[in-house]
Length: 227
Image 1 (spheres, one colour):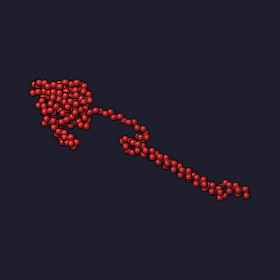
Image 2 (tube, rainbow, N blue to C red):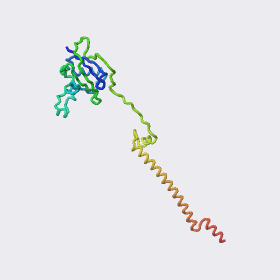
Image 3 (cartoon, rainbow, N blue to C red):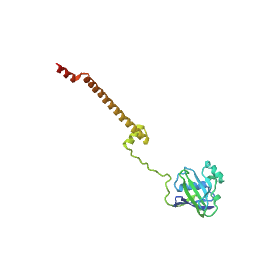
Image 4 (cartoon, rainbow, N blue to C red):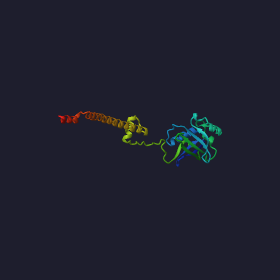
């Protein structure tokens, strides 16, 4: 049985690649699993192969999951061929030339892309368990990129905003709320002071009225003078 050797290169860096040998009668699902193992991915996401031309343009899609089989409206309008299922599609079905190309996409949210080209047709080795990775070049990228978490230092005013407003992340509105509360306290203190000053002014006013009516020291001096 014929054995196809495919070079599976990382789309972003073609210097990182794996050579995988697979039998012509084996399926795209087996090829998919071999790629996952060669690049140490976890095989927990959807994936698709696309038959490609010499210019890496996507044509027929061969998908992993049945739920991905229905075509979208735009694809139907473009008269795209119905999708195939990996488990039901043999590799030999889409080998049309000596350097047949495919595009492999894994995890549709992240869009890991791989360029696949057949580089050799070999004879089967009975000692090998196909598909098998026969060559590894370059360090495989980590499947899940870790994003460092940077804690933002908060100013005392912003920290107070978070406390008063019971917010996990203080924002501009919270800061304005604190400013209004502080203004309210200042206004209240000012009103209190004005009130106290007003009371003192009334007492002074009563004293002035008493003096004007003949009371107080001025009236006493006048009476003493009359005596």
